[in-house]
Image (cartoon, rainbow, N blue to C red; front, side, top):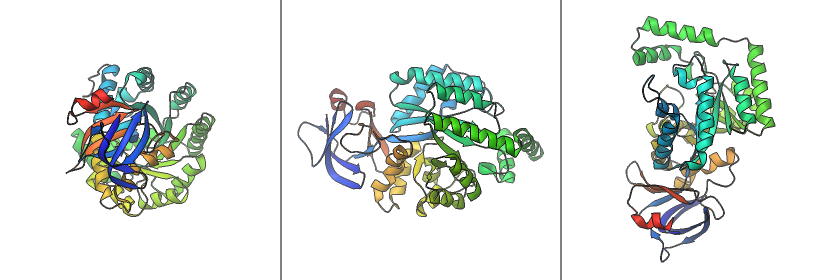
Length: 390
């Protein structure tokens, strides 16, 4: 199949009129100009399929309202379709093991393990390539054995080291956290403050215990060649500690100083596409646009809103030194390189045919998504020709 006469984003620039040939799930050829007999894509933009290393959406699909539990298979199917419609062709489901989380049952050890194993079971029947990002909360060391077992089974592709204790990381501004909890849960300021104090007490662990837990999870990840990321780095000191453990990505650094320290240690920095699109962090932390202006942003993650990926890429392309080519890397090639996915992330012959056809007018709209050479989403604009050719 040829995609003909399409504005194509290559690793180092953009071909205004190009054609791309897809065969056996791979990109076989990229040429300048239109070709005869191909699927005409004139006026559209062709980008590498988006690779999302951190997507928090899965829990909302399984439990759309508090204590309303849908079948896991239904939730995973709905998530898969949503991701395809957003141009995401490789998705790391970020799953947590936090029994005392406000998410309750859906983040229990048992339920999270069940979701991971069901995702693996369904993987070959889903539209996009799904992987597992296990979020390990350092203050819940009982999860260590659970994650060790999942890694040994080959069910985990990425581990992030999280600490959501109020007073540091994402929640370093306790007053802001109290205000947020009061607003979202309908509590008084005093009740919200008590909730925060209880979280701090529950999460408190001796420093030697935290160090032992970190060393144990890092040892397991190294033994099984599972990549590690740190989460919500807020100081250069924390970045140094995480780098020493072998992490390769600093996801959602909350200060410019932490992002700069991560870059100096050779870590890739990842931030949320919603943050980049809106121009600010919802929790008052580092703006992804500011990190980008400082040359400290490497990866865009869907975080909690996958439809923000394409608009965020287009927004950052306005200010990226390499324009669209540079901004597209944030959602594809850079993520692939950081996570060892050498077979995808660029529109280059020999790579997986993971592609997004988009209309880049306005905020941008995904027209079609191709995953491994298969048409997995179309809004109908290209007609039946694409479906027949695929």
